[in-house]
Length: 121
Picture 1 (spheres, rainbow, N blue to C red):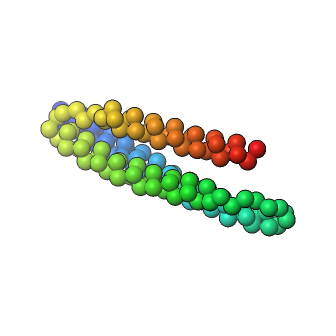
Picture 2 (cartoon, rainbow, N blue to C red):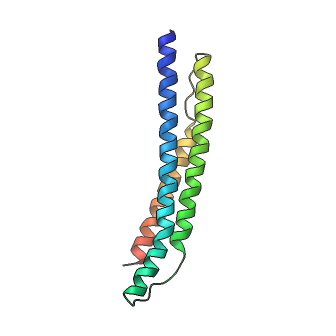
Picture 3 (spheres, one colour):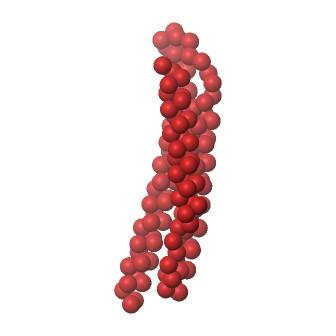
């Protein structure tokens, strides 16, 4: 029983680290996206081209950084809830609403990126 509980705690810690890696990736990607507009402006100045400045990449980058913050906070919440559930030998399944919200957010980001990419064509 004790070794099973130890494996459960270790799995919980690995999951928590996966949440943190994902959050860090969101923040880093948000930084890159936000800085893309700066790169585009500099490149357009060198190439003597006019590039519209919509600030869309800055807004999307900030949104990605906020998504990283939310992911990290949710990861901490899940870790603590699962840790407590393991201690009392109960299951701590993720709520279905969390999966629906996460899927909707990813879908919304995909739509925004697709629209932004098609607007440059």
